[in-house]
Image 1 (tube, rainbow, N blue to C red):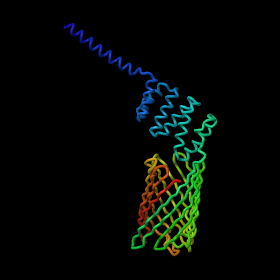
Image 2 (image 1 turned 90 degrees about the vertical axis):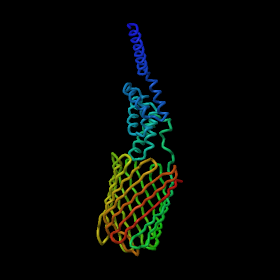
Image 3 (image 1 turned 30 degrees about the horizontal axis):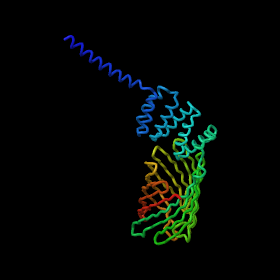
Image 4 (image 1 turned 120 degrees about the horizontal axis):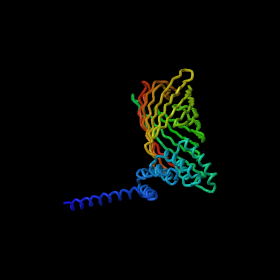
Amino acid sequence: MMNIFLDTFKAISIVAISTGALATAANAASPGERFRETQQLVHAGKPDAALAILDELRQQYPNDVDYSFARAQALASMGRDREAIAELRIASSLAPDYEDVWRLHYAILAAQTDKHDRTALEELRQAAAERFPLATWWQAPKDTGQWTILVGTVYDDLSNGLPSWNNQFLEITHTDQDRNQYGLRLGRDQRFKTTNYSLGLRAEHRSQSGWFAGAGIYKADEPVILPDLSYDMHLGIALDEGWVAQVGYRRRDYQAVTVSSLTGTVEKYYGEFRFAYALTRSHLHGVTSFFNHNLTTNWFYSDRASISATLSSGREAESLGNGQVLESTVRGLSIGGRYRVGERYGLQWWIGIHKQGDLYRRRFLGMAVSIGI
């Protein structure tokens, strides 16, 4: 019996020692081996698993720039750009001349489009030019301007037995490397069996400090339903934490009356969403003044697509044709979307309903196609 007990004890001891040895061997894997494992995980499309190991390595070796840089790469591959940039700043402080760190930082900022990131991109470009004067990755493209053609149509179905409306338009726009835009618009509007054609010019300027401004002017031939001449202008600024504020002015000169409008808009970008509120005060010259409210929500659910919804309420001035412009209570709801197909093509659509006082209820549907040339 004693021999059986001793043999059993030895067997258990051998198993325990073997298990402990294996655990110790696993825990004793060298940092280099663990680091190579993270690289394999990233290549296998598992950056979250790699990040867990890199977090441990960063805690154990806080001054190792390679671990910091690898952690930033994993975060960037997961779309966590802000965290990646924060980690890259740490890596740059550990090794100021580590060019790959700067290159990744630049690539992340260059892929982002809001004005604050463009300002940060320019600051990084200037610093990189001083530290890596012979490199080319930080240099701005010589010509990233693009011409775009937008062709669209809108159909409006009116209640109370009134004839339908329709509109067709063609826009040609040039966007330069600083996102300044210059455009030409040709339009055809048909309302109540009357047709007007119009020609418009637009320009938009954006500064790296966050300010932007734009203006447009439009002229109609034989104006019956459209204003003979209209123009608008706006000025705005992108603020911190995703806030944007702007003010705009619009004037429409019809055959017999003039309508001018002043609009203040506040926007907030929050993650994948944009929220905007606009208050418009319009003045029907010599008659009355009135207000209108607009609330818009956009959801940018991918880098190629977005959807929006707009509610409007208040009072507006509407052209009834033959030079008549009437101010009335309005209510409206519209839903729209955008989708980019490849690098050159895009689709836009919108659908909604607009109640113009007791005159009519207008149901509309529109679609446009954009082509980069």
